[in-house]
Length: 140
Length: 234
Image 1 (tube, rainbow over the protein chains, first blue to last red):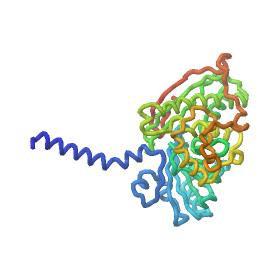
Image 2: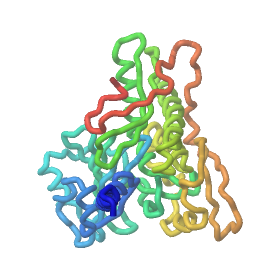
Image 3: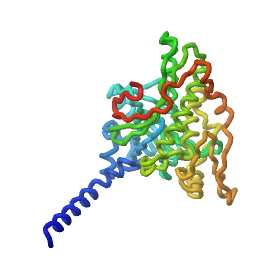
Image 4: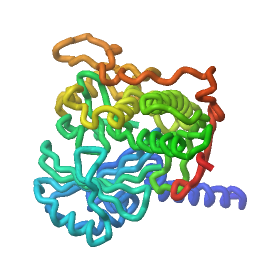
């Protein structure tokens, strides 16, 4: 085999390997939304903000969402605790981090504000399915 | 870009900041678009202009998109110069006209090459009507879902599966696009609906001759860092 052909083959294999490695990240980078659990390690590490990673697990059954809203732009990172009814532990956790509970909220939920003016945390109590949903909203 | 997995039960519509619901009155609603945070900020900057003491003040409104790692954002903006002394009703009318004018430009950006390769979101059937709902949640009624009749998740999934994803149905107007129940109306096709009265109560500002409102940037584009970016307000 000619030397240049060998080099080209090696190059193609290297590029293909790099693409295969990067592909999940490319997919996640362009995703409009994602739904995952803590066991989906790649998604969990890529999307989940520390606030949700360290949040008390008030139910043994929970999962996560990421939504990229374009237009009136925001990103929403959320954890949903199924069968949970009491958000007191979540309140204590947010309070310990310096978040302040707001009297008013733009949705029918409890809004919390921290020091980042682009960030709002909402705690929603839902019926179908019965759950507590905590959303971290970043507005642009 | 809305996906089938974004669909949630209609009973949660007022309580969550994202997700997709189907309503009998407005069709598909993207709850992320309908949060109204952009409108609240816009009205706040008009209010700030009114109390600035200047005879004329500039107000910018933008829509954008950002990557999940919040590295960059890109979008469209417009800037209008407003003569001080506007009533509360006029402020709402100006804000509505700014949102309606820019939302069309932004959806146009999303449906243009090469962005159209990564998303079918440009003029997606639910986008503009959801933006309009966001406006009325701020200026009129925060929880309008009792009037809009959202359906259960199962009912919504039935429509999605029968008619296909909402991204493939384009709507360049602020009128609702309705998808009749395929079980009750076999062979039905999507049709335009009527906005409910509460969503027609503000008329978008259309007087650009008297000098009260002048357009200083009609069609601006920007790219900026998503965290702590200053454009388009620089």
